[in-house]
Image (cartoon, helix red, strand yellow):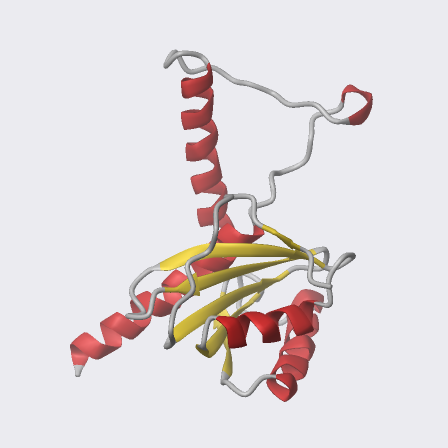
Length: 178
């Protein structure tokens, strides 16, 4: 059984082929994003929870369902460009995906994607607060158990979309140079 959490709601449009899949391999959740068939725009698709899902099997099903031609996985290098424990874990998992999938699986540097995700999340928070408070802005806090502030919202699919979009932008740039 595949447990896919789609925090953005709505049915996902199925394409006939040629899409690229972006993946952000986290230790708890895996964000998944999908390109359009022209490889111009990346959109968040789903968040796979490792405790509820066979992540590799789910990615394989998504690849088949959306006729994906390439999988792009974010590589969490340190800011100096060196490998870390996370980097080695992702490389190992990419090896599993390469054995499982019939499409190329490539690694892309994701160093600045978390900075962009946090910036976008802050923009969305401000917009949401403004709408909730009748356009006056302000801060709305949500609290979890025992009155403590809740952790970050599930944004893993947005991180995957940012990783994929940077790859798509490079493809467009490379095509323009030809």
